[in-house]
Structure formats: C-alpha cells, structure tokens
Amino acid sequence: MPTEPLDLILSRIDSPLTPLLVVSDGEGALRALEFEDHAPRLHRLLARHYGAVRLTDGAAPWAVAEALAAYFAGASTALDGLEVRTGGTVFQRRVWAELRRIPAGTTRTYGQLAAAIGAPSAVRAVGLANGANPVGVVVPCHRVIGTGGKLTGYAGGVERKAWLLRHEGALAA
Image (cartoon, rainbow, N blue to C red; front, side):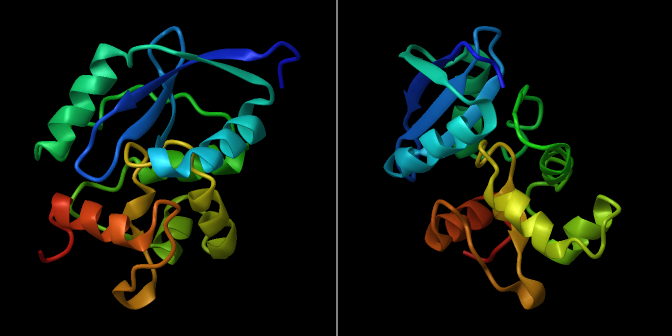
C-alpha cells in the first residue's frame, strides 16, 4: 500500500433507492460505490483496500454519472462498460471480475460463482470476497443468491438487493 494518501474524488449521485456515494480517481475510474447510509462501510473498505485515502468532494466522472442514470432509468446493461479499478487480493479481484460477467436479469449461487472462477470448493471464500466488494451495483454482487433462490446477505440490505434484482428483471415484481 502506498505511504502517501491516495487522492480520490467523492461524489453523491441520486438514485431511486438512496443517494449513492461514488468514489473515483483522477483518471475517471470508479474505485468505490456505496449507499449513502452505509458510509462507514465505504470508509472501512477504502482503508482496507488502499490504506490512507484522501477524499475530496467533486463531480463524478461524466461516464459514471451517465451510466448510473441510464441504469436506474431501465438500461440494465448501462454499467457494463464502466472502468472499475479496485484494490483487494488477487482472489477477490477474480471474484469481482466474474461478478461483472453475470448478465443483468440473471442470478448465480455462491457455488456457481466459485465454480466459474475454477475454485468450486471455495464457496465461503467467494462469499467473503463478494461481501468485501467496494463497488456495489456496478460490480453486481446483488446478483449472487443462496441455494434454492434465497436472497442472502447484501451489504446494502436484502430489501435493496431485492429491489435491484426486480429492477433488472431477475425477480418478479
């Protein structure tokens, strides 16, 4: 981890659920995204993944703001092309990359996700990596469900997970 604080930009973007905290770098890459009422989690994850961070209030990158607006307006694939740059371990980044391959409107179980990254016995580790995802919604950890279709843990709350899945067409309204 760097010894100097990492300079990042903190923006707030409205969503139908609650305002979102959007953290980006000076190159426009998305570093973190969290629901505003979960700000302490955002700060914990930033510290865990990057060490010292200096957040400066500013506007979200245009591409990020436009993609989020389009996603919440119903364009379920609008987030697919956003550049995401995360910290985390090699294993976590493998899980997060695989999450981005789950198409909107579909779900996977933790076991299916573990198998997809070539680690079928690592279901628990996949669950932990899923829970440490710093870029909610864009890295769609909400698309991972328990065996039998049960909506299990979601850092933003199971109600929000259900809303996102309904919004994408993965759950009946």
